[in-house]
Length: 50
Length: 228
Image (cartoon, rainbow over all chains, first blue to last red; front, side):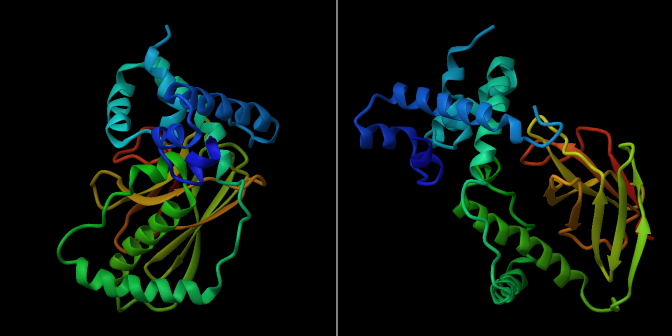
């Protein structure tokens, strides 16, 4: 979902249509994915970034 | 306190909301601390995406080609209107394609300035010390004709998703924003070419600002340099 939005430039409604998934689920996955990325990358973040 | 609209924060950070939804969410943000926090929180993940693709060094000929086009466009556009504001998608998503388009816009701004000022600056290059607020950090300003480059060492990034922005002060006027936004490398160093002519500038300031930059400084300057 994140790849389609960020690299593909598709909106959440376009992605929902593409994946035949409710818009709410797409929004939730975007949020969850970004949060996982943040947590996963926290160890590599430059000093001072929260 | 939670807010139902914070559910849109992920899509907003990825610039994946429809235009009207994105505008409505952006208008909602100043009034809702919960959603602002959520956006700041998720933006860290989105910023990492920009580094997920291989970083390529463009061939030198590309720069020359772009600059030729830019200078031709700048000559046409400069007398009519000021440089356009960067688009929002750039600051939010750092998407590769819009990033490239925006980079051209930034170059256009610099070229327009150079076209206006042009001419009498010789190749003289000098380096001046600059005042730096963070302890242990060092900064100098290299002046090359009408161009200025800040060389920084021992700096840390501002954190909280913010970036550094360069400001120019002329006479007794207020600091004027430049399009020069930057972060420092992991080793604390940065070489920052200022995207505006510094001729006639009394002072160059650097402050921490939101990712899309500000129209007026929102924090105390961390660097002060005097080009004269």
